Structure formats: C-alpha cells, structure tokens
Amino acid sequence: MSLIRKTAAELGAMIAAGEVSAVEVAEAHLDRMAEVEPQVKAFLHVDRETTLGQARAVDARLRAGEKLGPLAGVPIAHKDIFTTHDMPTTAASKILEGWRPPYDATVTRRLREAGLVILGKTNLDEFAMGSSTENSAYHATHNPWDLTRVPGGSSGGSSAAVAAYEAPLATGTDTGGSIRQPASVTGIVGMKPTYGGSSRYGLIAFASSLDTPGPFARNVLDAALLQEVFSGHDPMDSTSIDAPVPSVVEAARHGDVSGMRIGVVKEFAAGEGAQAGVLARFNETVQLLESLGAKVVEVSCPAFASALPAYYLIAPSECSSNLARFDAMRYGLRVGDDGDRSAEEVMALTRAAGFGPEVKRRIMLGTYALSSGYYDAYYGQAQKVRTVISREFEAAFHQVDVLVSPTTPTTAFPIGERADDPMAMYLADLYTIPSNLTGNAAISVPCGLADEDGLPVGLQIMAPVLGDDRCYRVGAAVEQALESRWGGSLLAKAPAL
Amino acid sequence: MSAITRDEVAHLARLSRLALTDDELDHYATQLDAIIESVAKVAEVAAEDVPPSSHALPLTNVFRPDEVRQSLTPEQALSGAPAVEDDRFRVPRILGEEA
Image (cartoon, rainbow over all chains, first blue to last red; front, side):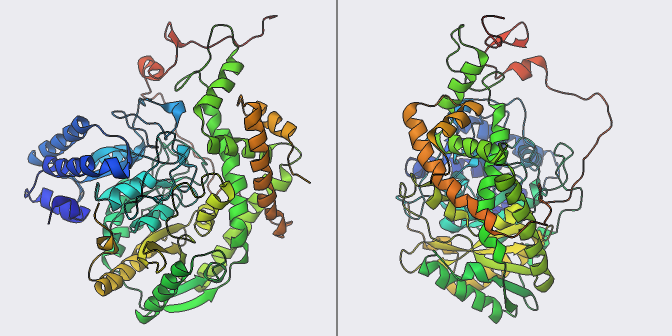
C-alpha cells in the first residue's frame, strides 16, 4: 500500500522503526499534493523546501536517538489561522496577505516539538467565518467526493486535504462547528475538544469564548493521537484548563459502548429541515449502538433550538471586538495612506478593502448587538440563553454518558448554492453550536452515505466538559462496527481523484 | 416593519470603521434586517431570572509573577508593519487640521 494511504499511527511506527524516513513520507505527500491540488485546492501556502527541511531535521533528531512521540515524522496540514514563523499566516483574508508572524502558535510549537512535519497552510472561510470555505478571499476548496460541492467550513481546506489523501492529519478550529461539519461532509473524523483543553495562543481570534483548536484524521485513533500532541495547559492562554488531559488515546484504542447510556437529542432527531438520507443513516447508527450493548434513551433539550440565534449574537459580538485589532497601523494591509488622510480614514478604507462580505456583516451585526439600547435585548439575552443551554446539558448528562445527533442537517451542498443566503448557510451549524456555547467536547465520525446523493453523513457524539475520552470511546466503537460491515473505511468508497 | 434601516447600517459602518459604498449599504441593510429578525428569536426563551454566561467555563482571572521575560525584539515587532520610522510604527495623522 502506498505511503499516502497509511494511517498516521502506521506512518509513525514505520518511521520510528527506520523502515522509511520522514523525508520519504513528506515527499510522497508533497507529490500527491502536486497531483490533486489543481482540483481540490485545499492549501493556501505550500513550500516544498521548508517542509522537506523540517522532515530532514526530524530524521536527524531520530538518528541522534532523541525520544519523540508516536507521530514523529508524520506530515500534517495546518489550518492557516495558526501562526507559523516560517510560513505566511493569512486567515484567508486579504487584510493579512503575505503576513509572516514573528512567533509560532502554541499548537504549532507543540506539533514541531513532537516531530510532525507541516506540509502547508490550509484554506478556510475568512477568519473562520462560514460553513463552506467559499468565504476565503483567495479561492474555494472542492470536496474530494464531488468536486462541484463544498468541503464544509470553516476548516474546509483541512478536511479536503485529509479526505483527498494529501495529508493523514490536519488541524482545525471549531467555533460553531468548523471542525465537525467539514469532517462530516468529507467522510472523515473531526473532534472539537473541551473548550480550554487546547491552547488559543497564536490562533487568530474570531470569538474567544468559543474558539477551540482540534484534530482531523481519517480514523478515530489518529485523531486522538494528534489531540494528545497539542492538548494540555498553556500559561500563554489564560482560558486554558490547568487539569490533566483526558486519556483520549487509551479511549480510542478501546471502543466499547456496552453498558453506556446514550441519549438521542429529541429536538435534533425530529429532523426539521434535515435531509432524509442523513436521518436514515443516523437512526441506523443509533440502532447499531443499541446492538453493541448501549442503553439508548431519548433526551429532550428544548432550548437547543435557540442555540443558533444565540450563537449569531454572541459570535459576531466577540468578532466585532476581536477584529478591531486590524487597524492598518501595526501589521497587515494599509490602504489610502496618501499623507493627507487621517488615521481613522485610512483605517476605514483599509478595513473596507481588506475584509470580505461575511466578515463585514458579522462585524456590523456584533456592533449592533452590543450597542446601547439593544444590548439587553440581544447580547444580554443571548448570554442568558447560553446559561439555559448549559443547564439542559447538565441535566442530560445526569441521565446519560453521551448525547448523539447527526453532525449537520445535510450532506455537502453545491458550491454557490448558499453563498448569497447567509441564513441558509448558518443552518449548517444547527446541531454543532450547542457544544460551543457550553464548552463541552464533541466529535464527528462517519456513519454512512446518504441514499439520495451518495455523499458522507456524520454522527455527532457530545460528552461533558473534560469528557473528551467518551467521544473517542463511542467513536471508536462505531468506527469498528461500521468498518467491519463495510469491509473498510467509508473513505475507501470515495471516487478516485 | 424592518428591524434596521439603511441609516442605521451607515451608522454601524462608521462605528465599525468600514468605508462602505452606497450599494453596499443597501445590500447589507437587507441582509442584516433578515438576520436580526431571525436572531431576535432568542427572546422566546424564558430567561428572566437566569444569570448570563459570558463564558463556557467558570474560570477566574489567572495571574503570573510580575517578572521580566523574553519578548519580541523591536525588529520582530515591526516586521509586519506597513510603515516604520526610527524603530517605531509610522502612522497617518491622528489629529485634525485645526489641531
């Protein structure tokens, strides 16, 4: 089997055993990228020499006898929202075109320390705002299952790179579903860790109380191995949790749901606005969990229906504040500085030229929600709804160990279909947003293909705060049972590129 | 009745430091109106006596010892600046002509 089809765990073991070098593995993936990138367009920045330099350094460290982790030498696609000192960082925005950050994000630093080799920076919706990666200021990314469709978003470059075998692993960030939804629509695994479980230092901020870095992989164990590499307390992020990281790798190795209590979220299983094929695969997977020995119960969380409107007040409010830093003064784009215009005029011209339409919409929506006279009715009320949703999760987790739902209401939609309809786009995150508002862990694992279009469907598994291991335990059990039924991974059914 | 007028959008654009064209103002007025109408549904949740959550986790302030640490050099800090003069960020005029 060619190197690009191997799992990250297999590649790590082969490199550690000296069967193959990190350079050879990197070259195989760079060659694959050269072959399929013209169609998929998952990456914003690729620099073969920088990548091979990293791989050579890892090989040298291993030869010198340095003890590195299980992913040493394994290549990774890195979302272009994490700062990297040796590659540009743009957040897919024109306002940061060509920016070379003077420092590495904590996630970046930990990848390097563990010996992972960064293949390039992946495309995203500008500043991670979107569900299709069409909001990138540079180009759209195409879903490897069907190139006319979106790869999800905002981490759509990462999901497409992994699904197209350009990389065995990728990083993402999840603010309202930006890891789980792209994983779902490309037939791979994507995990949103517990908020504060992975560091936001060096992650370009969108909504600070929601943003969470997490892993993409083609299987549950690889995702856990990657999460373990970059998780854990970081003094540089004051919202980082100072507690032991849940034993996610152990859980991923022991998929077992016998005796577990699994709750089906009634409001999401009812399927208002959901595709029939998505609901069919979801219901079958719930039956599968029951057949594997889990006790399945229905749980009602009526306020979850209000999570979407609450999110579209909270996230834009935080974004309007966070994106104030793009002021044309210290870094990034500056437009219209003719020696005559004031700083304020230059700022307004730069921001108008540098931000795309969705970013402008959200900045203005947030400014509106926070303005005096509207604050109580909008932002204040949304924060109260956040508390109500937390209480519903808390009550649910008294009854059950995990909650399940489809990851997103539909399969991958055609490029262009929702581009001019913000409200239709926002619905893609209907089922994922509650876990962002409350900070709990949630994963998406493939659970089949929809009958209507033959495209991947994802199962979302939600666990309490710091219950990340439960997501992996249930995810691994589902993966094991379904792959033995399918005779391989879901991704093996994807058409060849 | 629309939730937001074109004049209000122009005001929001000024507050947001976004120099928008007239066409953009019209476009965003329609879109923001639809979005605000939709997100106003948060009012349907009975939450009068519920405390607001600004954050997912009950974290309090985190402090560190007040010690000098390694930070960016002036060269690093200025490396992405649009304009630099004498080791400083060069910016357009901040005060009005009359000042």
